[in-house]
Length: 143
Image (cartoon, rainbow, N blue to C red):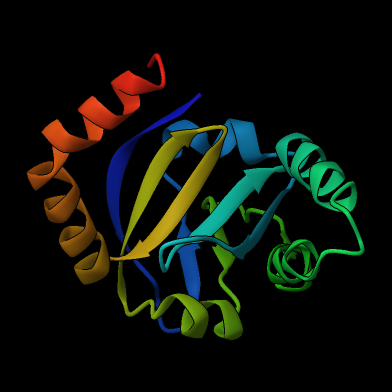
């Protein structure tokens, strides 16, 4: 399970180091793709397989289904960690997420999210300020 918040930097070659505690989970390979809320998703191959199967099963006749599948699948890139636990974060994904040199890697159960540090701080602060309202709405759903 991926949890926690980790601050890292992208080096001059576009490489990003994965937090040490997650490297074993990504050792067999991973996929990085466009995420939501101005983030990128980094998933182990097994979790990527589950997600891509769900995307493939979306109704082809619905424009929003096609658009979401394209967003996730066309933007995906296989990655392999080097001996220092780094991978190259493709330029097109950095541009999509507006990622600068400083990033935050956030553990979200079955995936890691990669955020530009400033965007993450803005998002986190807004969410923390609205935590009570969010909890009440989720409470109505039985969570």
